[in-house]
Length: 102
Image (cartoon, rainbow, N blue to C red; front, top):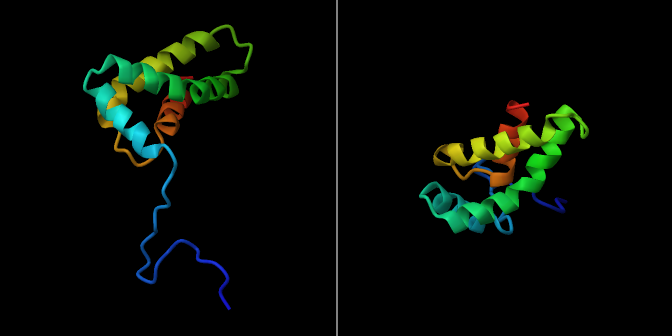
């Protein structure tokens, strides 16, 4: 007897579970990529905590250049917004950029 589903219907295609706030985050990305300053601010407030954690994990919390790396990662994130495909939370996209810029 099967008690739960593994998230795949019989056709083998994964079912995407709704993620709270993802639609709002993707909307903010689209608006920020279009030049909306308020959306950019809200988006940065949303992704900054994960970028900070990622940079500190990659470089060490007390590395003398960690704050500069965080700023550069956030700038890189804003510059990369037009390439964001909306397939994940923007904070994951930002964290990947932070990790690659360490």
